[in-house]
Length: 628
Image (cartoon, rainbow, N blue to C red; front, side, top):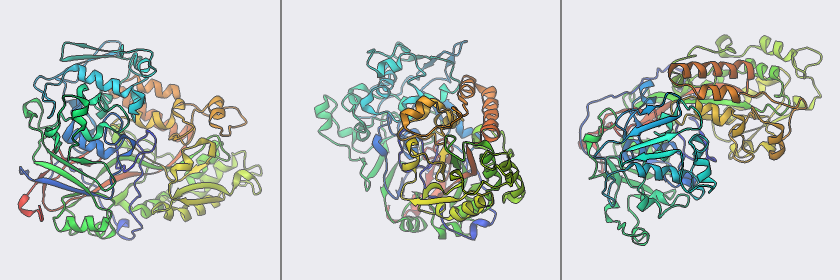
């Protein structure tokens, strides 16, 4: 899941302007350490966080619709509990689901089509509801996902998966036939096909229970976000003052704990109805008394306050001075962990010259990935990527796999030219895209104005020129805007980055490489892998004269139906297929997450699920806090 400050369509897009133009420091080696729990815990205190700006997106912090990694951090660590949850630790263990509201991991029928969960007794909603959670509250949450006015941000994980959910969405039914309850404590889901990652899908925030008596008062996009009723250990300040007698009385008071404006705030306090006996310390330890999040547009000031212990944590890109001290004086405050995300350049399979696989392979051989890593921040910012899915979500599979690896990762002209000679765009077979051909350039490519993307331009231009490709790389305010629309026929997109929604490669394969996922607006599948001529006509983008593009839909479906080790093996093979046989990307960096905290933090843990600090496990020394 990934540091992501904004929302693009309904995809988990990485939009973080990457660290810097820095320079020499990052060329030095710096090994990542997995912070599964460092330091001695203490109880008490308010954990103070500052970020550059609040960008909750159209979901407005409604768990049914908000598609924002930091929102998910607050939900899953502190505020709401789904049937299954996470340990909120680093590494592989942090990507595995464990029981949360459910008594166990659920039971699955022999045909893989029915999943059943039993809810723990004693779990209650926070004020102002103050009653036990029932299975029907989870049913209502799924009804919200299938309510168009709520604009659920990732409904595609459910609509085609649960029997009857699409009919409910289309108003052809008044109930979701595939979700049934037995009493107040048992819920079953009947699926349209075996879905090996359904455990992850019921762990997502949208699948957590919502009390209908509050939720039904807010069924338009973003409305419920200010009134989220907690089942977790913390809740919005001011919730106890609400009167849930009716929608009118409920709306008469706005909880003081959440202001969704760009300069707003979050203030969480302990939920008096939370019973730790219904939870586990493995999932949540709840040392802190609460959490505040405030906006501060001055990033340098955020880090200055952290160094003075006026702020305990941050959601911002580390400044050069912090990074320069990351391995010396601040080594106990700057934490690095695998980010479960891939940075890549995407090639459009419908647009010359990248409709030719030999051109796509040639550019993979010619690109100097070592130079790109250095420009992104060196070893502190990640490692060179040799394939598509981060090894961390493949449980270590393909860790050293890289079919395009070259000496010192600096590119290989001989191999690049050998591929180009096999291309239809090199008729004289000299290893260069033929001069004068429109396909050979200038090739328009949008990228971000900010470093490191702007710094990448000379490396890409110079490398591609060696095989006869002329690039016209334009720096724009938001490179996703032109790239998101297939009609723009963007042949090469330099701004791409993607992080997981949960610890399974499906969250890469489905939104990025599955033909039916292609959208005419707000599209994330930039390569258009699997696009049909019918889709191209609807989206008004050009289409190859050959009449088709490669398609991996069945392979994705086959992997999706599996579970356990067989599922991971299948995804690993599919990753190799994408990398070698389809070649839609130039993957160049598996990112590292960098997180800086004050010396007030006596126990730091990284949450692999969300990609942020694991607030469920952190603790503070309040005697060190300044201005608290």
